[in-house]
Amino acid sequence: MGCRGTDSWSALLRVVAEKDEAGVTRLVPDPWRRLPGRGAWLHPTGDCLEQALRRRAFGRALRTSAATDPEAVARHVRELAPRHTPDVL
Image 1 (cartoon, rainbow, N blue to C red):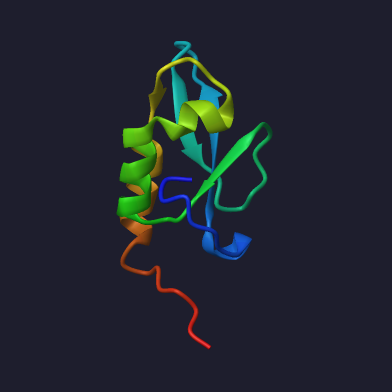
Image 2: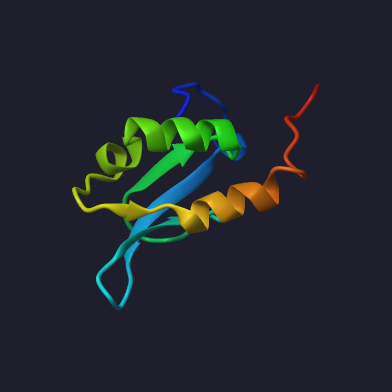
């Protein structure tokens, strides 16, 4: 979504939008692909996340006009980054 590249589903991170008790829409990582609702897919890298935020792609992909808080997704990507290596055949 951020880099607009294509990849296998196993190499992408699903993200959904959820409202909290205060009514704030937050982006939530869904690595197990189980959360309900519309999902957006991106590479679990800082570059892809940064491009998606800069392009405001989450609002379009998730069909929400509310401002979204990407902190949970950014934290997940930071934690995953050292372990994320593409499959090499």
